[in-house]
Image 1: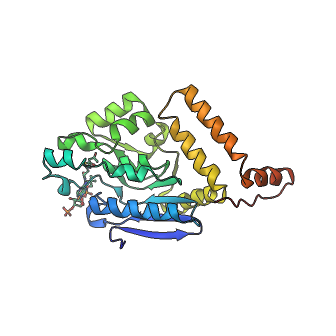
Image 2 (image 1 turned 180 degrees about the horizontal axis):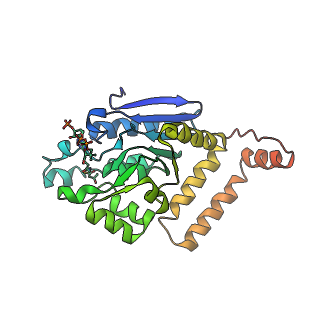
Image 3 (image 1 turned 45 degrees about the horizontal axis):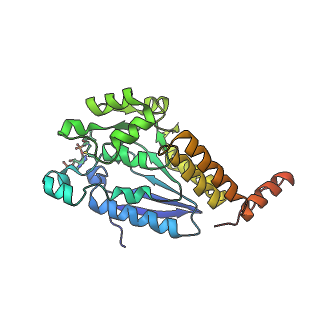
Length: 257
Ligand code: CAA
């Protein structure tokens, strides 16, 4: 697939995807969705890639779903096409994805960042769910994921007033894992992804699966699920290698892909 709305690069074992619709502040239209999903599934299928980074521009990670594409949609079309359901494909990626966010991450932009496994924010980042100002509500997960990230009170505040949250508030609230200077954003995110990509890939994928399960199930079921995954890792060469390397005081060389 040719990609017109994203730029795809590899940095060692890291797949770097840059949203690239600068004139529309990376507004998320159906083309960008299709290209993003194709890029992510390509990286997931590539045994040389261990983790991904999705980023935007200095001004905008993404300023939301494309309002101009959306404005004429009828209820019948929205319902019958299950509008926005295509984003579920993005969340099915089994390798980790870090969102590197500078500038605006609004509406679908904030929701896309939250679909990633964690968010590294530039000190310029601004998060918000302004759909209410357009006469709608979040439709790509904002009311659900934001509530799980920051709790009911702040999620209600964001979804009902449409106000923006700066990077410091986002870090304080647990929406982002770290804040870095804007000039270092992509480098820091790629560095974090490279670190992940050097670990045992099955362990990384299972860690992602286990943490995600915490959002879907009870504590007792989640703990049982985690333990079963943990047990299964003892079937892999990487567990032998990782523990032998520790005992022998050397760097492990993980080979399971
Ligand atoms: N969709 C389509 N186009 C968008 C867009 C969006 N979400 N956001 C910005 N653009 C376009 C603008 O229309 C403008 O295009 P033109 O030059 O052709 O007019 C261009 O990007 C630059 O934008 P501005 O001139 O508005 O830039 P600014 O610096 O003055 O303001 C902003 C920046 C505050 C982010 C402002 O652009 C804005 O408010 N954007 C919309 C934010 C928004 O409401 N997002 C939610 C969308 S709905 C949604 O996401 C639903 C969902 O749940 C998935």
